[in-house]
Length: 124
Image 1 (cartoon, rainbow, N blue to C red):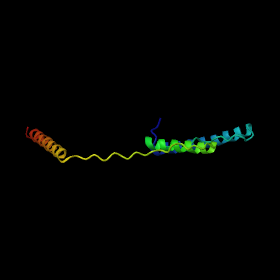
Image 2 (cartoon, one colour):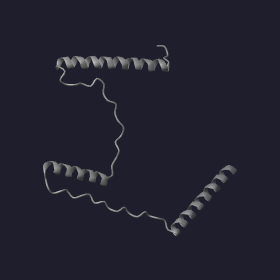
Image 3 (cartoon, rainbow, N blue to C red):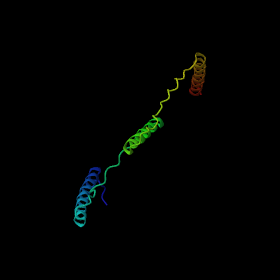
Image 4 (cartoon, rainbow, N blue to C red):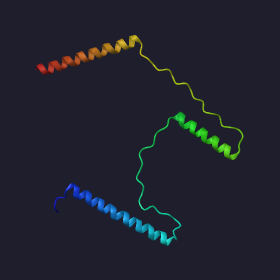
């Protein structure tokens, strides 16, 4: 078998995809003739979409409560569902001056050890 070039393979793929869409459309036409055109069939499957956005637990709760309220209004129920209470976010934690100094000192010791080890490795 001769070695195929990358562009030849891509052209072959495009040609086969074109033939596939033509065959799919012909199959859809035949199925429509069998069922008197009452049920639509997809000629080509839809491309898969990306991942969905994740919602926080609080926002999912608010959405659920809002949906329950909408359904209660449709059913004619008078009592509204309790609204979502949003808790205040926790205050941002900060390092104390002593904690920051301890971290800086340990970093300086660590880098001094690394520089000494690198210097010893190059002198060997």
